[in-house]
Amino acid sequence: MKTKTLDDLFLDTLKDIYYAERKILKALPKMARGAQSAELKAAFEKHHEETQGQIERLQEVFEMLGKPARGKTCPAIDGILEEGEEILDSFKGSEALDAGLVAAAQAVEHYEMARYGTLRNWAELLGHTDAVNLFQKTLTEEEATDSALTKLAEGSVNKAAVAAA
Ligand SMILES: [Fe+2]
Ligand SMILES: [Fe+2]
Image 1 (cartoon, helix red, strand yellow):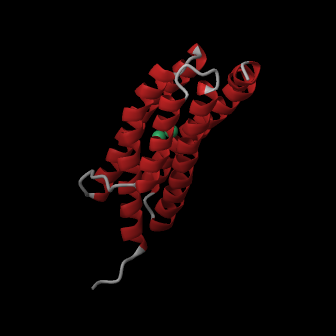
Image 2 (image 1 turned 180 degrees about the horizontal axis):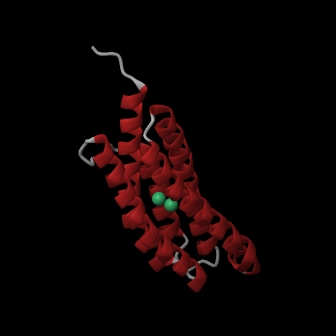
C-alpha cells in the first residue's frame, strides 16, 4: 500500500467539510423556521445564503486540484446537527428554545472554524495559494456568524430564556 501524504489528508479533509457544508445548508432553513426571535431567524437565513457561497468556494478548490467535488461522510457534523434537531423537537414552544438553537448553531460554527483553519494552513504548506484565500474568506464568515450568535445570546435570547424560567 502506498504511504499516505499530506496531500491525501488535505483532500480527505476537503471532502469532509464539503459533506458538512451541504448538510448544514439543509439544516439552516429548519433552524430558521424553528427560531422564535425574528433576529435569530434572520441570522440563520443570512448564514444559509453565505453557506451556498461557501459550497461554491469548495467546488472551486476541487477544480483547482483537478478532482471531482465529492463529499465524505462526516460523523461529527451528523452528530452536531442531530443534537440541534433534538433541541428543535424537545424545546418546541419553550422560551428556552432560541437559547438552545444558538448553542447548537455555535457548535456547528466552531466545527467549521476548526476545519477551515486547518485547511487554510495545509493549503499554505502545500503551495495552494488560491485555495488559502478561499478558505480564509469562508473562515472569516464563520467567525462573524459565531460572533453574531454570541451577541444575540447575550443581548436577548438568553434573557428571554431566563425571564421565563
Ligand atoms: Fe459553512
Ligand atoms: Fe457556518
